[in-house]
Length: 301
Length: 335
Image (cartoon, rainbow over all chains, first blue to last red; front, side, top):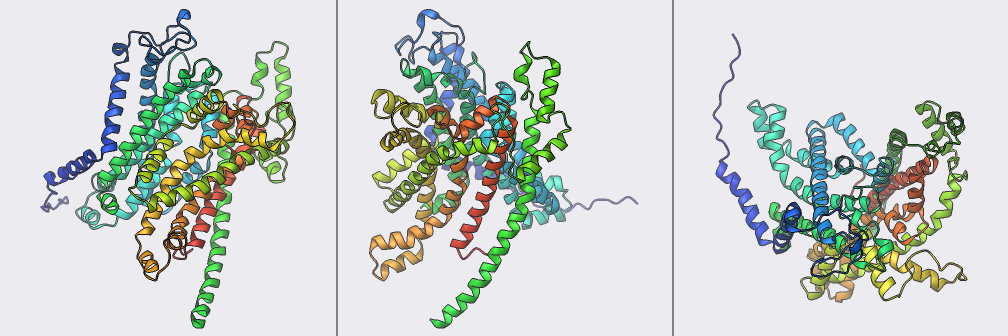
């Protein structure tokens, strides 16, 4: 006789309640004024960058030798650069590059970090030991030095390479976070209950523990986007990231040191947009932390 | 009182033995960690395209045989594992190899740059330490005051500023517009060495790094102070009639600074590794610049030397942070 699974009716977690948790978090997030403003600024930046060809009448890469170093004016709100290109246009197009690198690099980092953290935290023992020593090792590398080595040897990186390299050098924090969460959750009653009714490891991990670890992952991901944008702009500023003529917020500043005397706006505006994006994202991250971790808020009073 | 002292003494000795064992264990664990790091560094350096001989490849006067001869001279024709073992053997005996470009010993080149980096990063370290303690304490004590809001806003802003952009802004404002400080370098060229001149060259690069670091440090200290300020022992201290200054300095700050010490310890490697981007902008001849120049020329021995030193420092700083934390906070037990 083939074994037959005994079906035990288990009351499902009421879905409405589950959703209202996120709804509550959303309400709290909306109450966080800096985060809401950050969200607005960021969305505006993203939309303007995405719609750059519609917003700007200029070509971001076409040079015009009659318009070199025009000071900011009505026709060129942020002035023009050493090749007569409209700075505002280049900033909008650069936003596409910088913002998408930030998002994609974090996607890579969060995916790797979550996978490593899940496996290490759930299975423990030697797997945990090996993976965590590897995390220690990755943490002990001087990150910027490695980025520079990659940049120098790839003779400037394409978008895809930057995304992968940044992602693979910044997943460790997430891995530690997820691992710690899994360690503390894996012996909780609801996990034992799931195991009792015969749920397999994968189902327990994905359906039961992971959803409960999402909050810190979301916060880490948000702050990670800000860090990735800064890393990308630093690399491109050093001439190792996105190569001109394709604009990125970092590589637009590359020649700024030698042009600061005659055209300081070239040094100011692209950096201002990096700052705007990063500060907005950091505010959003702050707001998310308060919204997703209610204890954090009550502690503040 | 006597009895208590006696008991504590026994506990102290036990704690010290445990601490010693803990440090020893961590040091032993650090060995495979560092070996792993050095193998990975070595592999990364060799895996990426280009190399020390690639600069000659475009030169028509240098034949393939010449390149082969060069590779042989550098030992680059040996199998990679053997090259690594050779490097490791020489490294631990203090022979860090010779630069491919200048043919000078790596140790001497690093030794030349180290004082410059320590001057720069040491100044940053002290500035950040003093200012963060003062500002962090004041914002926490005057929570929700105008001062607190301004500082919190400013720290958030500096945290979100790319270092290189801040450096450029400072140069534009204080160097080019106000002409208060020099634009770069360590001293005025050709002028007789004078301490005032050196200090003026330090201001902008130090401010660049310190402002960004202050952002995170002040935030950290403020949060940690706010937590201690609401503890019961603070009320006790006030209740027994201590002045507010003493309560804050002796009871609150001392406890709040414990986790902060670990944050500082983790910054220590930077004293030696330097700040590459800032050194680049301000033309500061430190370790970061040395790394940069060597990276652009595939000067493996220097790169390996700097990578090895910096990762060793990072590992040691981590250990130091854990030990100091446990030492200052007796609730932490070293198992």
